[in-house]
Length: 275
Image 1 (cartoon, rainbow, N blue to C red):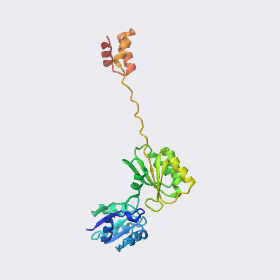
Image 2: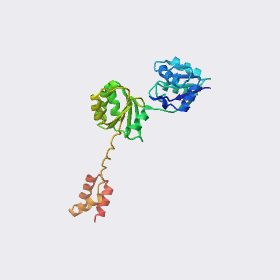
Image 3: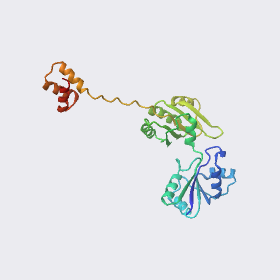
Image 4: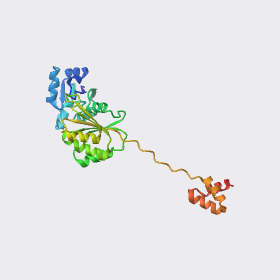
C-alpha cells in the first residue's frame, strides 16, 4: 500500500518550502497538483522531475478513483496552488477518500496563509475561527458573519480584491467596527499588512484600489457582561417587617407567600422565627 503525502508549498516566496517537502516531492512516484503550471515553476526551481498530474476542483470522481488506485502501490504527493493542501481546496476530497480506503495519509507541514496572516495581524491568536472564502452573495455573507458575531475568537477569511469593499462593509455592519488587519500578497515581493479598525481599512482601500489576494483577520467579540441574577427574597426579613406592622399570623403568611413565592410551610416557619 502506498502513502498519500500532504505537502505544504510556498504561498509566495519559494524559499519558504521545507527540506522535508523537497525530499518528498523528489522521492514520490507522482505529484497531484491543483495547478500544474504553478507547481512546475516550483519543481523547476529545485530541479525536481517527478511526474505531475492535475487534481483540481473540476476533476471528477473518476480522477479521484484513478489516484486512489495508484495509491495501492505508489506514493503520491498532493500539493495545492499554495500553502497546505486540504484547506479551502479540492485536495480535501482526495484526503477523505484515502482515509476512508485505509490508505496511509502523512502530513508534510509548512506555509499556511491563514496562520501567516493571523500571526502578523497583532490580534489575539490563542483562539481563532477560519471562515475560508467568504460567500459571494451579500445575503449569504451577512448570514455567515452574523452567525459568528458573538464568538470570542479572532476571525480569518480569504477575499478577492474586487469584493474587498463589500466584504469589509458587511463585516462592519455585522460585527461592529472591530480591530482588523488585511494581509495582501503575503511573503511575495509586494507583501503588505494593513491594520486598524474595519472602518480604517475601508477608508484606506477607497483611496487606492486593492490588488492581489487578501487574507482578512478580525478581532474577537468583546466579552459580554454577565446577566444580573435575581437575588432570592429575604423571607425572614420580610416576616419581621410584617410582624412589626402588626399583621395577624394568617394575613402575614399569605402576604409572605404572595411576595416571595414561598410555600405555606416555609412562610409559616419564617413567621414563627420572626417573633
